[in-house]
Image: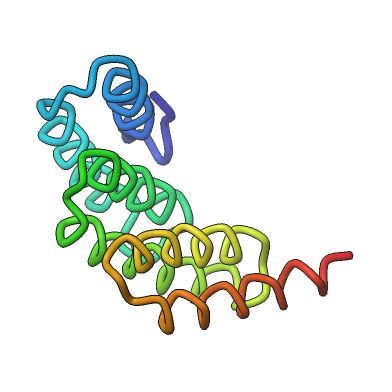
Length: 128
């Protein structure tokens, strides 16, 4: 676990949950991941990039398990957090936009997904 200002952070718990989920498909990992996310949100504050990573990771767990309605609000929060903390034209934002687009396609919202993909491509094009 990382330490910041004397507080232990639980991002490694979320990462471990992701690994367990990918290997076993266990739905129990969502519970520990959500708890780890709450710990990090409390320790770091809601608008921090590390919290956005955690939000993305927990959203990915829900996505992998086909629970798209649970994944979407988390990925939205991750995107807003990254845009505020890092700026709207950062590679991390592009990755989150691509992840969000994939989720939107799974829920048959192709037009919204295309908008996300266009934004992500524009960010990536500026990086080259």
